[in-house]
Length: 308
Image: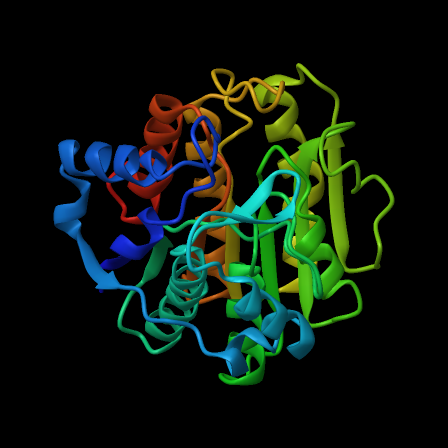
């Protein structure tokens, strides 16, 4: 089966003002690079559906979901935190982003795709059970994981997060859920200033100091993530795929390069083959320098589709 590529034009209609780093051009840069490299020819393209309130409610409180629906402006912007705002198209984009992750989960578990990459925005891993923050409204990966567990009946799922910023929202949602192992890597002392003290025993958080570079990332993955995943024996892997740890991205200072993302993806593919029937769903999170983002996603996707 081919890998699935799930996105939607609505995801590019959300924007938060001139100069904001989480901009619509991010998806265009990714699509153009994958198209130029010929990788999209090997993927099953799917339009993301709209997530329902019931699906969102598996990861967020019903009160919070209703609050986001009610905040959608008819014009202009509505700010939910200093860095995060809604325009008239944001709600639909956020529903498409969560819907893409759900669709990917259905396709992969149903055997219609070997794995899936969701080219979506707004991102999601900072969105907590009852709060939006950090450019995020709904936690796309968390919604999909709960869909895999509660609807499809999986027993153990692993979430891998290699964004330069700690996935505090995902940790908040899963800290008491023993069905989920979360393996996170992030730059210490960077927004959202969390992660060093894990909130639950199912969290494998690795904070790296600034300027650590890819060798420290690979060492942490090899010595901590991979043994934890082997012990947990997940039935499916989900990836919060943030590429803002790249050395060209000024949102962080870790200094990764495309080869590091390629290597990490290959390790996760090996885990998935051993324990998960190859099942992986990867969702875009951060990555704000357009060329570096596009190149890094391409390196990641090449491994997913077996073209590396």
